[in-house]
Image (cartoon, rainbow, N blue to C red; front, top):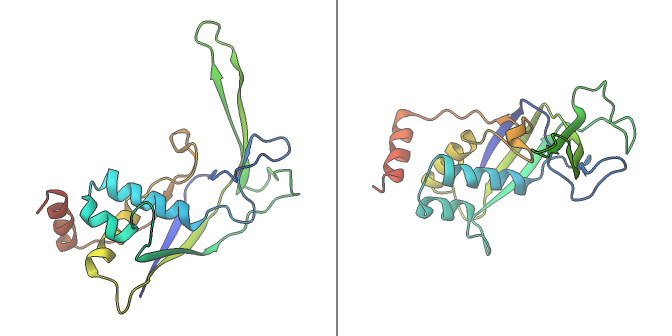
Length: 189
């Protein structure tokens, strides 16, 4: 059993690679701008903090923070990031760019030392991913509802989300009955 999703990107995204590139303090991984773990983490956070679902509904779907899981996330397709070279951003390509951030000292209104960030970002048009049931038969219907609802509640991914990066959308249509069930779970019924 597999549940398929399509994510649309509304703004550039920065899911840092963990290393700096020449001239950048943070850089998106050109080969894999978004990994499955980042999507799973965003969906789990949406289930817990946006939908406010109880742990009894979240843990069976997303698993404990360590140990075996019943579902597996896999990225299927993401439009590759075009760059002019390994280390330079092609600013004429609307899917790549730079992001700057600076911290200002309140007393002098000047930049704090070592608080200027220059990051390489990517703008993907879309990404397709699937969540695969690892058990036998179809995954539980309640798990599938939690997956679909939490996916629909994800609106940002990656770093600097409050600064306008990583705004995304995963369209999910829920029936009135499914919404009522989610509200019952949230209320502890």
